[in-house]
Image 1 (tube, one colour):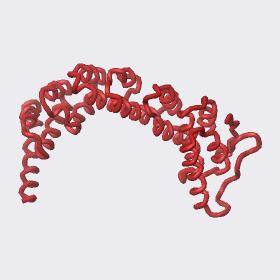
Image 2 (cartoon, one colour):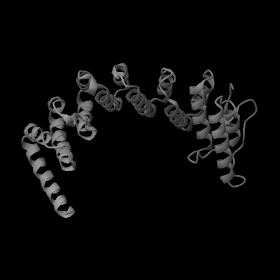
Image 3 (spheres, helix red, strand yellow):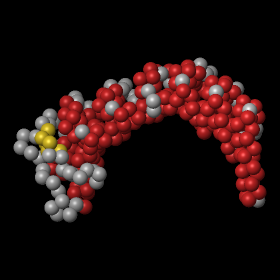
Image 4 (cartoon, helix red, strand yellow):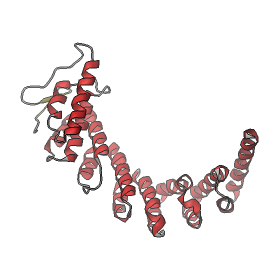
Length: 274
């Protein structure tokens, strides 16, 4: 029954951990030869993870030989450990894999490296053939970079090729930046040329203005900015959102609206360029 299975799994995990501590390569090699299944998956993660922390290149070489390479949970044990120690070697290894495996593994590696170095990650973006994998990596780089340097991240996202949909990530980064540095963010967003990416940046700005995490919500300014969104569906979505959120506010909770000649955000006057 389930209890026996759990006991077997726990015992197996204990044994493999002890073995991997002494002979990580032998333990990982044995586990990687097991038929795929839940127990094998757990044992592979433990043993490969143990080897990867000691010798990530050795773990990657073992992984390259079998099917476990395409198991993202097992693979991540290697990409995560290696990305922290020697990101360039990790990316070189992923890029050298056969074509049928390269895109998925390289995408995974680039995402891990992006946590530490966006520049390194961006350099390898062109080697990811599959558009869905590249899309996912662009989002990942945009998110991790946005937490550290929102303006640089947004500029990079804004300049991505048209076939890469960065709307969601642009919106999220714009919202976070406006909440932290309203003047800089609003000036930058206001200076963008018309287009789908400006629309998403403005949607992020509007979201920040009416967000529950903003202690100085400003519905008047949000209404002025939302009118500059060109895409009718996105504009309607945020016009509705402003109305819905304002209706929830108790009378008198709405801060002062637009300032003369500009837009007030948190008491800062911002010249808009709709």
